[in-house]
Image (cartoon, rainbow, N blue to C red; front, side):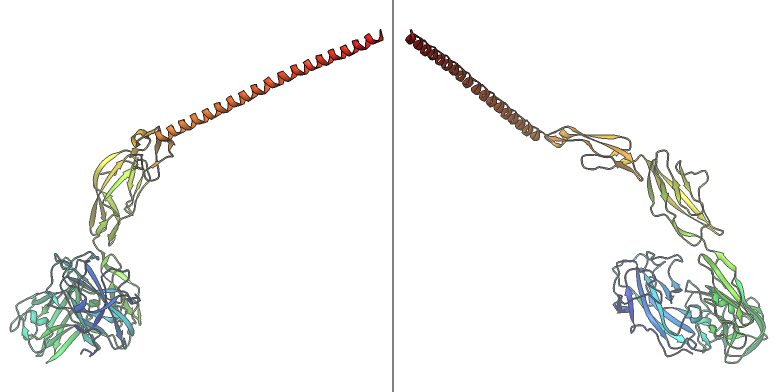
Length: 558
């Protein structure tokens, strides 16, 4: 039974929308108050590859809401999240990012279905977040409107049906109906296969993250007994099938649904195979196969821990492996408590998308080089170069981190290097180009590009009416050449002429002053000579007069 509560519905729900990637955009605690609120038909176009969409899902009581079944419309690729956990991926590569286009173009009028089991995604009473990222269809223009819409409905039974759409369905011949109709959840039709060992039905879900369930059921219009079957699961077509259920001596009730517990199904699988091991006493008529999630109940139930859901005594509680691993880990319920994590079914994923910050590195001779460790997906245990290939002399590749460090000691023309990263199950690689050159000082005004250790001499005459030279030495710096201080100077010819004229004027003034001073000195010297002579004459005359007076006096006496 499904509830009447639709947390979101096509054509009616307003979604929060962003056309740009933001860290943690799909988490429950992210603040989307600045995002536009739009109905799906109004999202419009996005010049970028990926559009981000989210909606709050309020759960009245998590104890009564176990499964959220969803159908979604899209034309490109879609990834879906609940409370930040990836729960579905359609038409997208496994290691997608914001620049990933879809694997192919999807029919925009055809809905895909998937489900979310609340106990595996941290569903809580109150606020939860459903989020989608919608990727551009392969080969199409971003000028086309974004195609998206979705409806969700909760399953509230203790054993709730989980829904999926399928990418393939195959099997032994089915009489009365098609093999596809054995998975359409329609109890009003039915068919049968040969009542013999080896009869099978095999299907793959469209959700590339796989389907999760813990119960397998058969809806039958008639009774039947005495038969046995196995249910096999696997995550990839390249994997061997794992038996998740094996039963014999089984009985189907008239017009009823018969179910079997499959705890392993919670780990999530892309492909499922039903195969008859023991023929029944008579033909078994089947209306539909059903996958369910059944809430654990009864004595001996172990409460869930994190992503490991609650299970019954003796059952395993599976969850995804750690980042970089595929498969599933599990805890075993014993004495009402889940045990330690067991990772025996976890295997490494093949490493992918190995990238350095740049594809070309032009290094400088004699400088300390540090090429940062590359980015990659999954796990890389060792980085290495091809056989008999070495980096430029003086450089080393760190086998653990992928960093390239050292001091190059000889020049080398641009050359391609392939760097590999491997783990236990696979290898990936990236190609980068490396060259080593002498350091240079770049153009700086009158000083043109110059090699480290050389001096650039600038002839001032090249700048016009100037004379002189300027010199500047190029030294090796931390990363490249660095200019030293300027020596010498450029002098304008006009300035020189002005200075010469000024000098001549100064000289003329000095000469003029000297001449004037000299003439004054001569003039003063001539006056003093005449004065002395006059004084001398006066003294002589005075003496003569005195003598004359004396003579006269003497004459009188006689």
